[in-house]
Image: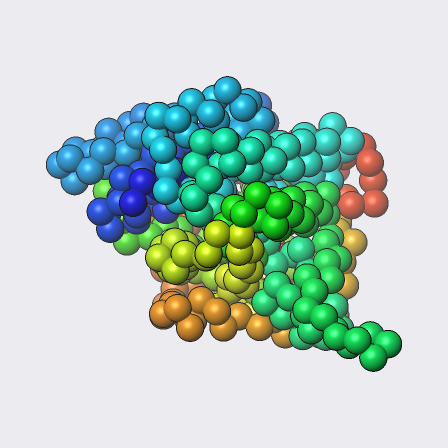
Length: 400
Ligand code: NAD
Ligand code: USQ
C-alpha cells in the first residue's frame, strides 16, 4: 500500500516509517521539524544521537537497496503543503502522528496552549479535508491518547459505552475528562474525525495510545544512523524513559506527588505493530473505530520501584524522591482500561520485564555524557499560567 506518515520524523513516526517500509509498503513521511526546532530553541536534545531526516532516509535506502522512503517537508496547518503531498503520493492509508504531543508544553502559558490546540485541531481538520478532497477512500489511522478518558471511577471501555438512561439505551462515545490542554486537543480531534466519518463517509481508526516507552525498534537498531529520538527532559520525556536516565546519573527518581497515578503503557515495538494491524483490518467507508492501544497498566510508584530494584542490582544507588506534583491529577484512583481489540487482531505484546528495564538503564549509562541535569526537574506547573521552560535559579541549584 501507499502509506503517508504525518510526523514521520518523530519518536514514533520514524520507527513506523521503517517498519512499514520493511513490510514492503511504499512509504512517505511528512514533517515540519517542529520537534527539532523546539530543541534548538531551548537547548534540549535527544539522549540518543539522531541524524537529520535526510540522512536517516538516505541510510535506510542504502541498507535496503531500493525501498525508497519519500520525504515531504510541510506543516499540517498549511493546506497547500498537505494537498501537494496528497496529490503527488496518493495515499491509500495515512498515519497521523503530527501533533504537539507534550502535556507540560501545552500548560506552559497561553501561547503554548494556543499553539498546541491550533496545530493539533486545525492540522487534523486540514487532514480530514485533504482526505475528502483528494483521497476519499484513504484510511485515516489517527494517534489519540488514553488521557482523553481521564481517570473515571469505572472501567474505561474501548471508545464507546452502552448507557441505559430513563428506560432507554444507546451506545455512546465514552465520557472524556482530559487532564491538559494537549489531552483536550485529542478529544476535539476525535469529535471532528467521528463527525467527518458520519457526514462524508470517511473511514478512520482512532488509536487511544497509552504512554510509550523504549529506545527503539528492531529496525531503528539495525544501524546507529537509524536511531529514533529518546527524550528524558521535563517536557517531552515520559515517565519510564525519564526514570531510567535519572537512575543512570544518580538523580533521585522524580515521582510526582504520591505516585499512585496509574496509566496504560506500551512498548514502542508494539506501537509499530498495532498500527500495522489497524491498517490491515480496514474499517468500512463511514466507519469510525476506536482501539485502546496499551498492553498493561502501572502506577508511577510501580515504575519507580522497578527501576530502583533493577538499577540497584546493576550496582547503581537509586533513590526515589517525592516531588510536589506540578500537575493537577488524581494521585490515588481506580484504573481499569479495556484493551482487547488489538489483541483480537493478533498483537503479541512485549510486556515490561526487568531485562527491558536493565537494557534501558544500560543504554542511558552508555550515553550519560549527553545527559543535561538541568532538563530533569519540572518547571511547568498546571496551576500557573506563566511558566517558563528553562529552569529557574532555584530549580537549577537545588538539583545540580
Ligand atoms: P514527537 O514529538 O516525537 O513526533 C511528532 C512529530 O510531528 C515531530 O517530528 C514533529 O516535528 C511533527 N509535527 C508536529 N506538528 C506538526 C505539524 N503541524 N505538521 C507537520 N509535522 C508536525 O511525538 P511522538 O512521541 O512520536 O508522538 C507521535 C504521536 O503519538 C502524537 O500525536 C502523540 O500525541 C501520540 N502519542 C504519543 C505517545 C508517547 O508516549 N510518545 C503516547 C500516546 C500518543
Ligand atoms: N510523572 C511522574 N514523574 C515524572 C514524569 C511523569 O510522576 O518525572 C507522572 C505524571 O504526573 C503522570 C504520569 O507520570 O501522572 C505520566 O506522565 P508522562 O509524562 O509519562 O506522560 P503524559 O504526560 O501522560 O504524556 C505521554 C505522552 C503523550 C501521550 C500520553 C499517553 O507525552 O503524548 O498522549 O503519554 S496517556 O498518558 O495515556 O494520555
